[in-house]
Length: 547
Image (cartoon, rainbow, N blue to C red):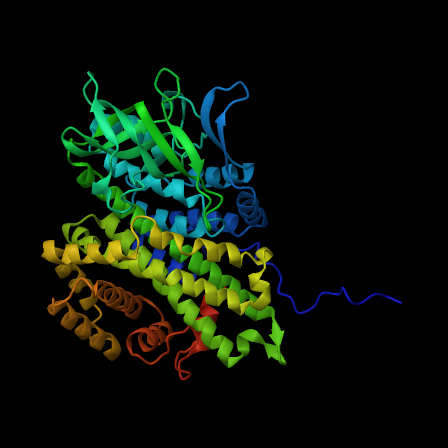
């Protein structure tokens, strides 16, 4: 008698073997919107190639392996010599190497560079999010180093290179390099002005030695680090290489690796500088915060993009599962309540992706108006999109039921990753207060922001009311600091609504305005008005076409 208890039925096939880029309507339409026609075919082909790799079975396996075998600290070699090296699983190097080869550390000098890099970052990090950290910092280090032309000439070609060379050796012998950063200290956290790391000048111009303890150092295996330290002239930015020009190791003591909630494939360390840690000044003494401002803005945009990537992968998995899974006599995706949940998740994902691409396009434009727009839009987007990521992934996991709670589904890894970008580069309060700072000090930023959202006025009555409500709140400065989060949220929703009304299909824009701006939805996902065209919203979000 044949055994039948192990026959598998009513389980979806794995979501592999698909083009992550081509399957994302919001992303592909954004590329068409922002990339110059003369380059459009080239960029589409570039992103589709990356998308096919990101959706492959081997990329998924690399992501699983890199997280199942997190990095290991080797402080000494077998003979007792101090080496301070971080050892990674080969899967990590495959992921990071593929990303570097695809150009995800270089955007500053390419036509449409930020849009194509942001799209590529959003596509590739769906395979595995942890290695996005060194990609982001390497990319963001470039504008900071340009404050010191000699350093930029030496390092920028390496940081933007498509060569992945992870061995620690003098950069003069390498075809490519990665950058990390070490800013926060245990006594100050986000309050960088409270740091105590000291920088003492040497006889050679621009050279210093550092003494101090950094509580968080991201990507400690990198070739060089941007570091804040207190020089005689005040808080100053420095570039500290891991390997000195003569081939010897710089003094860079890794005390321990942090045992993190998520992002486990990536190393985050606690490090010490012992008074012999050699570094070169970047920018003027006492101008450290100003020197780093463009790097901070670039990494905050990557926080938005990375959260959008996590959201997109979560909704793709949820819609894919519901398309194949049957319950109570029908496919889950056809059940009205499940369709409501999936549509709500899809709206959140599309709004995040659309906003990330708009910010990237503003970087590429480079006009004065767009620079002012970014000054306010970046912290607004960083605050809201990263905040929405965790509840959204939680709901997507629930769409898979108990299957989603199992590691093999991939959703638990996404859920552990989800809070990271809200914390990195300034948590929610830091972003909300930065919004207030921009409003108070840079009136041109508010004008640019209002011009952007004003482009959609008159297209939807719910959006118009939300804009009016936001303006009313901006006019009332009483207790504004305590209301900063609420204000940032309103500004983000109005900005997303404006973008979707102008660029998304009518059913998407209508559902977003009803559920996010019109007050016609509950606090949980899946509470959209039932009269909306939710089936069309879900179909648009499906990662693979119907069989």
